[in-house]
Image: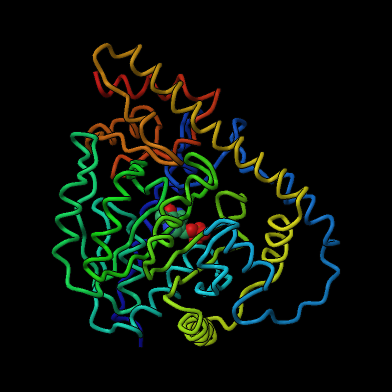
Amino acid sequence: MFEHLEKYAGDPIFRLGDEFHQDPRERKVNLTVGLYYDDAGRIPLLRSVQQAEARLGGELRPRPYLPIEGLPAYRSAVQELVFGAGSEAVRAGRVATIQSVGGTGALKVGADFLHAAYPDSHIWISDPGWDNHHAIFQGAGIATHTYAYYDSQGQSLRFERMLEDLRALPRHSFVLLHPCCHNPTGADLSREQWQALIPVLAAGELIPFMDMAYQGFGRGLDEDAGPVRAMADAGLTFLAANSFSKNLSFYAERCGGLSVVCGSADEAERVQGQLKAIVRRIYSNPPMHGGQVTALVMSDPELRALWEDEVAEMRARIAAVRRQAREQLEARLPGYDAGYLTEQQGMFSYTGLSAAQLHALRAEHGVYIIDSGRISVPGLNTRNIDYFTEAMAAVLR
Ligand code: PMP
């Protein structure tokens, strides 16, 4: 019955990660998947999470269904983290928020919601972008297109072209934007550029979808959410997805949030109901354990302070690795400008390496980088950074 189906090629990023693990060489470096590793090459179990789990008393709890929209304390924590403690939109009841199954779940529920509200609208995604954005929105029946974002040869944003592209869109088009730590380029709009972009979105009556998977990994928890808050302050109606996968090192717990900023409390109530209806028919309600831990870490002052320190630690390590890699590369290759490493922020950097160079890195040096040339910076550490920069220099020479 299903013989006509094509074989799933697998996710190209996970596939390359598998290849890395099968590579028998001792000297190898995995810069593929977007996971934060500490300097010892481990995925951290945050102390704030450990303490919250200890307080919650392990596994000896009954497991009723959570509400369709998730835990109230979790949803409040999402609103506070994304929109800020003093948010006018939140206080006015203009924000509908659900606990989602990771950032991906937020995108899926948001995509279904948008398609139901505006069945004829399409979405525009940055070029280059995250492949799964296309897959998720297409899966929800929304056609995807791209707007100019980054010139990988010139290692610079194409902001004027981006504005031009967005100015040309039909009203009620959806626009996918990354408030911070753009995946895959690591290149973000400046505060001034956001201020220039927001009126373009408003004038075109476009519907932005802000996807914030790396809050806290750029400049700070509040700073990284700045574009979301600026958009709320400007009175725009938009969606915002956030994820705890990276900043709580909580990948497998699938904790995220979807918020829709509306024009009024009444509209937000109707939107909240529609989000619940969508959740009900996809997975009915979110899982409990991760939700409770997240809500506790976010709302308990002591755990929250500890968590913020831990996020700062991860952010500082990424920045230090970026500086070190840049210095080493520039020392090894006189005349080579590795400034992109420190100008870009968050987990990813776009190296601009060619397909041949990427292949040589993999084949000759065991350095695994995905085909776009994007590196996941936290894959570098004290033990492999010299080796990595030497290998990079070898293929760039
Ligand atoms: N959006 C972007 C841009 C991402 O990079 C990711 C994670 N790779 C996600 C969303 C999904 O996050 P999660 O793992 O929480 O589903």
